[in-house]
Length: 80
Image 1: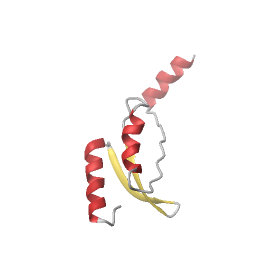
Image 2: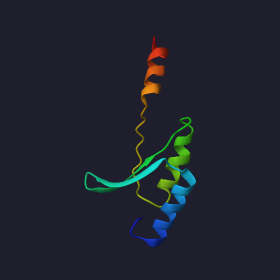
Image 3: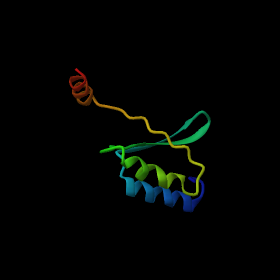
């Protein structure tokens, strides 16, 4: 996708639509990898973010939820 000028434009359009907090390009296990850091308001946003990446590509999509310290504190309080 990155090597194809049209694919690169599609990636730029996707980034403009999703508006990630950050985008990083790296490799993972020998594969080209793009990391999108996004703030998901709810799990319902997963298809909005993931589905465009499946259209016309062999993309592998993974989600790794993370929390900041304040979110961890609130979660611990709710678990008690």
